[in-house]
Length: 178
Figure 1 (cartoon, helix red, strand yellow):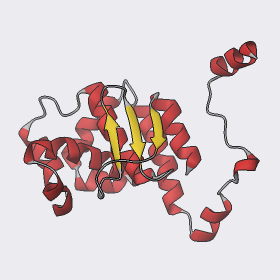
Figure 2 (cartoon, helix red, strand yellow):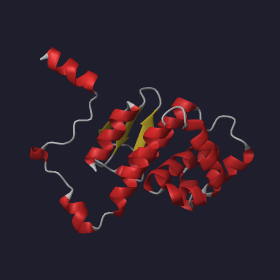
Figure 3 (cartoon, helix red, strand yellow):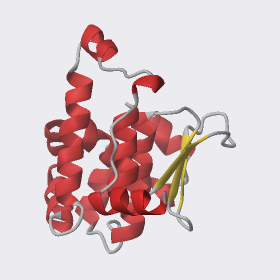
Figure 4 (cartoon, one colour):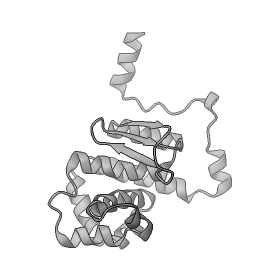
């Protein structure tokens, strides 16, 4: 999980931190000003994926001027708990964030639940972060597809070291700075 969260941080250039968040039911938050994600629990992939949806909306204005049928698709797929937790004016943006969580978990299911929005989303993202999102969705889906024994064996201990997600340019700069 930490590798996937680190990949999100690197590929989308967002700061992801863990710590206290106000609100007993709030698991994460996205700060539009500094474009950062904070989650209560480390490597909480569903929460980070949801907050990534807010980030993409902030960067690409995905919900701005959205046609009524696409707005409806996003809000109709929000569960009652989400609807009761947010004012109606936030349902579309929360719907997008939930779409992102579901898209990363299983693209095929997201396309069934959100057929029109999926077409819109993929076309809007194809020349931007779309390829990164599709690759990330494949990796997240593969993680969720692991059985418990395989998932446990894929967990790296801190002393084993994790993947280095820096670009070649970042690695060269770090060597030069040393």
